[in-house]
Amino acid sequence: AAGVKTRRVFLHLRSGSLPSSPTLLVLEVRSFDFFRLGLTEVHSTAPGIAHLKGRQYQSLGQAAQELQAELFGRDSGYCDYMREYVAYCISSFSGAWDAHLGKGTRNVVLRGERFESSFSPGLLNTYVELAPDSLVPGGRWVAAGDLLPLVQVSVPDASATARLDAELAQNHHNPTVGSRNRPQKRAATSSSTHADQSGSRRDDRGDGRIAPADERFRAPANEPAPAAAERLPKRARFSTKEGLCVYRTEEDTDTPHEILATHLVEQAMAGSSSMKMLTLRPLHPPGAEALVVPYLRAVSLHERFKAVWRQSWYPERGGSTWVTARTQCSESDGALYDAHIRAVKLQAKTTGKTEVDLFHNLCWGYGKVALGRYPPELDGADAANLA
Image (cartoon, rainbow, N blue to C red):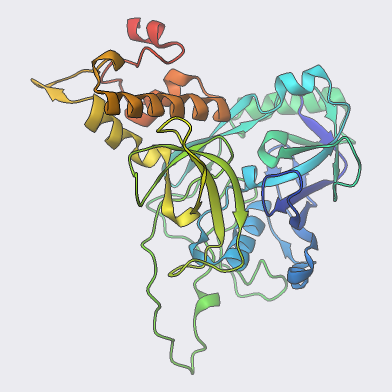
């Protein structure tokens, strides 16, 4: 295996996930080498943000985070750019493509927090044209992360295969970015590029979450700073990929919801600069209609699952932890139990994890010892409970 081969890398930020959703801007990653996504330039934009065209950044990660802050505001949260930026791929799309696309898993540690990202080491030196537009019929939209590792087309197949083996052996596909205990560095005061003016930490592996600089939002030194507007409380950032599940922070807060789509609105919600909206389908009651919720009014499944699950189905009895079987639940608790099982299955399918592994991470944490039994409704639960 040696990854996807291509001549040029164009990545699109679209206003939604539907086939007809327009593209807001296109980035060209001018320097790419397996898992390293370096010098990035704004290739084209929608008419309303044409002033961004031509801007250059030292890495894809820096470009995505700074553009996120500029387009949607500082409160818009982390841009999960390996999922939110997509490429329009033109290829033969053989059976091997479908069998291997996104089937690998990278473990990324960001300032002490671990999360997973899919990639495609099994695509055998597959040539793909990544187009700056979607005019050619028959192409497919693919998340940026699923195209990794990206290999220059000029690299011989044998050399690419050997190089990928070395990259994986040296764990370069599982980066550690930042540290909880290390203060974030400021950028040098240079005006050569927009990237130098950002005040953001550099990262050239395509996995760093880069916060926008405080300086660009400060008043000039000789002018008083404006009174701070009332803002929504800070919140954990999370991916909004279709098929993942979230909880709402207002109304029905214990029910998981499936993300169906995302889109942008023209005006940010009060108290923030975020224009992102989520189309959600409640998983309880069955057949509930979809609803549109501001991104800032939702939290990830990981953030609340443990508390909701343990409060409802993992009560402490005599110092031991046990699981209540579905048949022992009341009608209302049983329906909510089913909704959580459904959420685990949906999230596992979307992220490529096994259902028992995902449940373990949600309920007990990554690398922690299981403190109870796995729900029998999950694939692999019987074997896991016997282990």
